[in-house]
Amino acid sequence: MRVAPNFAPVFPVKRIAAIDLGTNSFHAIIVEVYSDGSFRRMDKLKEMVLLGKGGGENVISNAAIKRGIKALKNIKTLCDSYDCEQILAYGTSAIRESENGGLFIQKSIDEVGVKINAISGKIEAELIGYSVQHGVNIGNDSVLMVDIGGGSVEFIIGNDEEFFHTESKKLGVSRITQMFEPDDPISSEGIDAVERHYEKELESLSEHMKQYRPRTIVGSSGTMENIALMIASKKDTAVDITLNEYEYSAEDLQEFYAWFITLDRTKRKKIEGLDDKRVDMINTGIILLKKLIDKYEIEKVRISTQALREGIIIRHLRKEMIGLSWAGKFNDPRRRSIFELLRKCQWHEEHSRHVTRMALKLFDALKEELNLSDNDRELLEYAGYLHDIGYYISHSKHHKHALYIIRNSKLKGFKEDEIEIMANVARYHRRSTPKKRHKQYWKMPRAIRTRIRKLSGILRVADGLDRSHYQNVKELQVHSNTDEVLLEITTEDEPYLEIWGAMRKSKLLKTVVGKNVRIERKNV
Image (cartoon, rainbow, N blue to C red; front, side, top):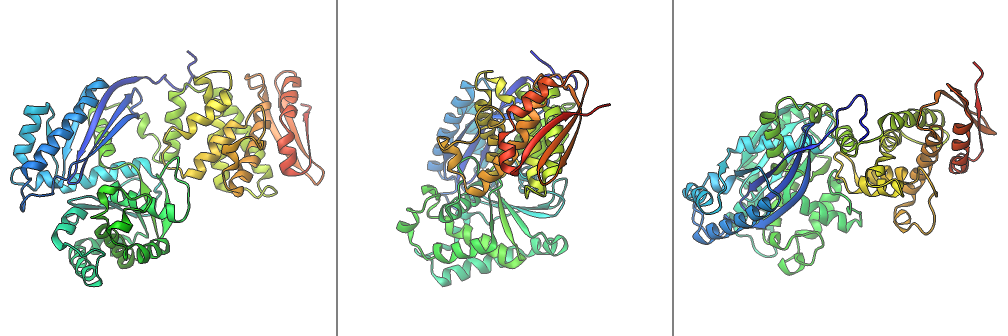
């Protein structure tokens, strides 16, 4: 096995499961933890349980207890099939607030063999905050993280490094729907009653919102995901690879709300993106989101597909796996997830870093005339690091394997079009350039295809300049004039293989710059 000199090999060390026992549903994930402290999701299971349905105030009904135990047995069977060493089960609003929550916990121990920890609302908010920081590219500016559950809603004000305020309020969609029993379709009087309740309950949050003034909501969990999926469907926006980082504006939500809130149950059931089990509860969630946007002058909403269950894993790794520092080395989830993937695929580090350095030199010289952005530069850098990871599967067609790996690795912090750009730039670093027969490529918008062609043209030449994989090119200078792009290279040994390799792959770059490409060795 080839091991890069600066990085220890990474290997799986254990499998653990995390279960979020919510008021509406139980969510479980099974992850493989690696020796660098990172983790990879292997499987997941969602069971709609509706713990809060049919019981009295602060009581879980017998029927709901039976549904919950049955769901836990299904989850335990899945965990056993993966030989999980540990199951971390956290109970939230319905369990911690119920008089017979302890009975449910004991039944889980006796009948399933799973011990449930009933956590406070503040801890729940903290864990959700961890998962959002881990999976979304937040940055330094404050954002409002919102997790709309069945029994409670968690609010976290923070950035990529710290939380400024966390709180949990009893405003979950199941709870509010049962409390107000709105008409179908919901009447204007019903909307007003729900909004007045929200206004009163948001007083404590408002004090902190005035102090930190976030303009972005990052939403997690089912209600926020369902709203995003419906908006994406209505806008005909692709979210096939990932919903993570999907973004819509306050205006998008207002337009969607005005249409959706008038629909009755029958019409809501036909909306693409809405889970059938949420048809009766979704209105109270949408009203809350609109209230937050209006009240706090929110400008946009982004989605985190990670939620409490990933937060459980992250907290466990921070507390129990002391010393595995790599997973926390990058605050930026984009860079961290790229390097986690590189290590897991045993990347050819020296070659990939060398090719990337030359690609970025080419980029910087041609940025203005190719009308490229700083975002394009970042994506080219990552595509350069990733371009050979297909070797992890096979040498043959490794460029196509790279495309598959990048598209299916659940990279964090990236929007769908960014993942497509990195995957396709890596795919086109060798062999053929984009062709009409490449159906997946031609499904993408023209603007994305154009960016892929430009970045691929650059990466192909940079990869050719290390045809030997021995980093013979020590310096690269790029000169662009009206007639040609001249690449002056300084090499350690004879440059013939590098010049041949780069010129052989230069056709796409010639096309996108609209002029000749020439390479010559610089005399030293």
